[in-house]
Length: 287
Image (tube, rainbow, N blue to C red; front, side, top):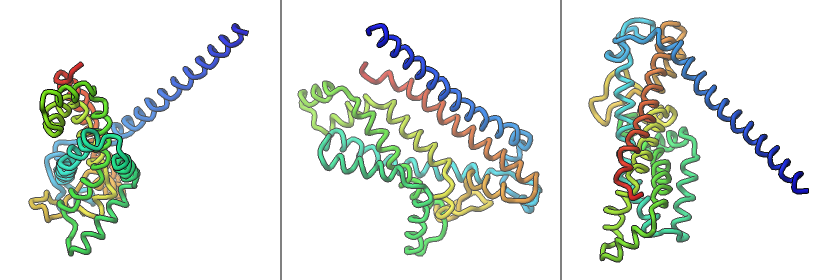
């Protein structure tokens, strides 16, 4: 009987190992195929003009120019949206764990954030578009930043909330016992302890914002110029890929893959930067 039970466990372990290896192979092969496709189709169209020039006359007919407007526009949009989301996310995450803890209100807020996280980005774009129409606003960099901030807010807040919950309770108790207020404990103890997680949450939200197309299509619009004001339209890399792939000219379509390659490299740099920054900031955490 014992031998049969042991054999059954070995078979179950063997089956789950096979499933784990297959899952890893599926994820790795999918990533490799995507990177290979973007490299093979985008690398031939890459040149210095692509990253240093804005589109010129006849660009969408295969003539000169680049996508500098989309690169800078994406950085403006994602950077502004991430900064705006961070201003609200960190206080909210600290409130959920330091003040509200596991109260009913905290559970409702977490549930609301989870629902917001799951809402498609095109719904955010439609919502922002309706608000802009009611305020007589045109498509602009400001509109795109606000909608991306709304999109990133639940992602950043929930990520911060999860890492803050990992703070050792003894640290907070020791700080309060020494006479610190809850606010001082949150800022000087909790934030310092979870700096790596906060940095990861910020970069995670930034990566989500810079790769989104649906929300900024309605709110930021698109232009061949680099935005010089918050009230002017702004281009983005995802929309540059979308518009260029829709043209019938093969040369312009190849440039779309080059834009996709640039966007992929930016996201890859964000991922690597997140790991490096998390490692650097972990020295401030109490082990």
